[in-house]
Amino acid sequence: MKIDDKKISDEKPFWETKSLTEMNREEWESLCDGCGRCCLIKLEDEVTEKLAETNVVCRYFNHDTCGCNEYKKRSELVPECLTLSPDNLDACYFAPPTCAYRLLAEGKKLPNWHPLIHGSYELMRALGISVAGIVISEEVVHEDQLESHIIDWL
Image (cartoon, rainbow, N blue to C red; front, top):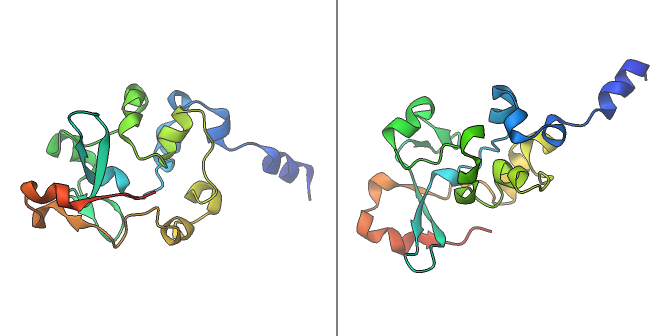
């Protein structure tokens, strides 16, 4: 091993050395693990204010990639879309408890299954953290039926 190689391998990853507000756009976007849970339709209990997730996803959710078909316009098309940025980190409360943005904002580490650590999305999907293949579109569920679709993920 050359000295330069050792130096590179000893460097900590950016998410351990930078705060969320210090990250550049590429670093910020790479934190998203692509689980798709932020695309789930959530219901808020009016009494407890606790959020409940459903197995129903936004109409723009891409079931093959677990991404948004309208990513650049998502906030415009769906005003209630959870669009995290360094400017609204307080909205991390609405992100799933496994979300990298939320974990880092809370001072926690990324889990070993995270694609930045593991190197692929496969472990995350094998562990059931991704919504791939287990959700339905809001286009086929009537709004009055959403409560019957509440589920517990993790």
